[in-house]
Image 1: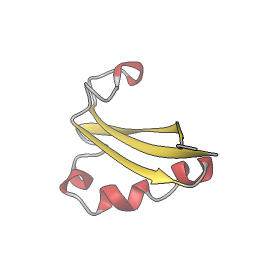
Image 2 (image 1 turned 120 degrees about the horizontal axis):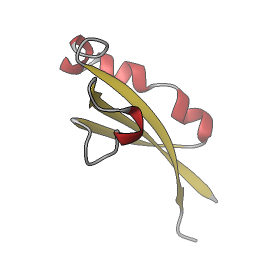
Image 3 (image 1 turned 30 degrees about the vertical axis):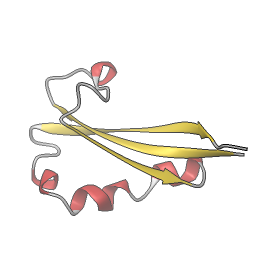
Length: 73
């Protein structure tokens, strides 16, 4: 069975979307979710609880990814 990791990358506005990766993001948040649908929600609340909320849309943007993780059998 597979699980998924929801990833939220916080990147500077000057960084092209395709270049926004784990190593170039100013912050990376990850959480294990049960399915792909879980990757699409909840991250807004996570960011809203941090100091990053004031910068998103002004100096930075968010990029979300859903990564499949194989569970041990």
